[in-house]
Amino acid sequence: MVTEGSGSRIKGGVLISRLNMLRHHGGQVRVDEVLRRLPPEDQALLRKMILPIAWYPMELNLRLDSAIAEVMSPEDKRRAFIDMGRASAEEALHGTQHVFVKPGDPQFLLSQAPQIYRFYYAVGSRTYEQAGANGAVLRTFGAENVTESDCLTIIGWHERAIELSGGRAVNTTHPLCRARGAPHCEYHFGWE
Image (cartoon, rainbow, N blue to C red):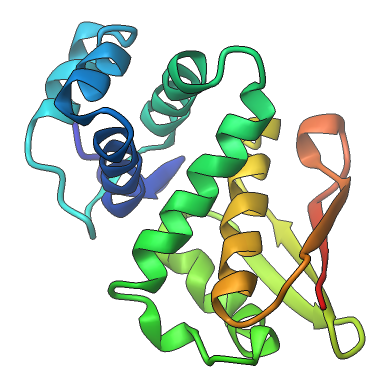
């Protein structure tokens, strides 16, 4: 069900992009295969109309992502989570968030990270720091339910966003992660 108030929430647009990715990689058969791995209440919610701007429980998204990884890439779940993030960026940045893409200027998009964060998460914040002409550091503070798999989707999202903005040969490190006991999550991006 859609949540009210504060807490661990994520926008419905994320859930929609995950389901669209599944449809792209196997149609409704693939969606059904993934949904069967979820609890009945999750299945019921995900089979209804999902509102892109409504808030949904973050736990629902984490369970869906885990089920997708099990189906799509059981041998390399890390890659599956990165691919989910990439698919989400592809959909968002060719859709409602296209205003964040300036061809030839990945820094512009990355500088918008604090605002883009609010499109996806109800709790926490993200900062941007330029690191040379072709690099940036993003830091996430105060997020709830931080998992390494969610961080991988964030990496995939930003890698694809940099590519859509004209960056090539994107490389990423994730030296700090709250899921590994750090005080915040930190992502270092570089590109040609």
